[in-house]
Length: 385
Image 1 (tube, rainbow, N blue to C red):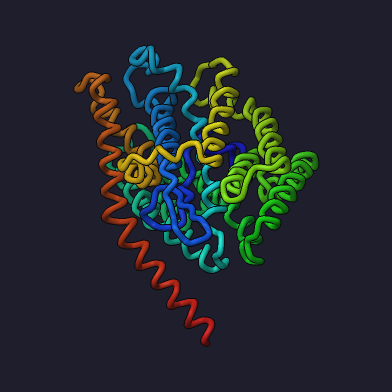
Image 2 (image 1 turned 180 degrees about the vertical axis):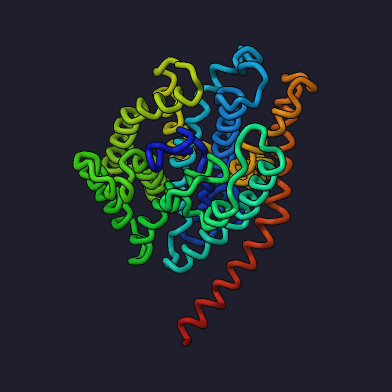
């Protein structure tokens, strides 16, 4: 989910990296003052919705060239709703603001940084190498990436360095990284209610100034197209942790109103990638529904949504996001004509979900623990040196 980093990204909307604090955990946790912590399972459900929206967008609506005939002819009913799947990134950014604020409470900037590195990189390294290998072996939809580009992609800094991404969906990681860096300024001083609100107000005002100035550097740092979702997510978490008040409602309402306006440009980019136009009003309606859904979680209206499968679903969203696009297109390209589309599509989604689960269990969880332990030892050595 975007909501763009450089505005000229390959795709107008993919889900960003997950906002959870601990490797292997797909959703958020919250706690009361006595230390008891309860999982917000509804966040896992929202993340799964966002991920499946993006998968539908890439497999059904995006003009990838993977299908032998236009996807709208193969999926006449699903094609139109899938054309709005790029909006899943906005939902991801909204959730990210909520969960990052929640997971940083009471933590140092060092702990925050180590948690982010351990959470983001293991599955990402696997996906970069896996996607690069698949596309190199079967360059039927996308050209194989150069080895030097693959090497830079492993740093997750390909976008600011102007290097071609191994997979187009990775552009949102740079958006998330910039949010983390900005929020780390507050975490470094100690995250409090007052500082969180001050951060939201200052970021909103600075983003407006960056937009008005037209300065490219300021836009890169302050993200005036994307910041409104993160700001609203933080405000929603503050409602959840404390209670709603007029200042928080103003932050949420102002973010929604400004985000609605910027969505028109994002939809135009999406239509360029899809090769067809779609009505604008569902875009505004969907984003409003996203805000309402997170609001329901923030106000405690979803406490009974605690199905056991939701946490598992939450763990799948990040690996699914990293793997689904170009590998899925290769599968479609080679299976189309041999397998009926109405069988191929659900089977492909099921296989991608299974692959995501395997990456989570076999790559994310074990490597994240080792990375965290190694970084803690390194920090101790540096401090003691």
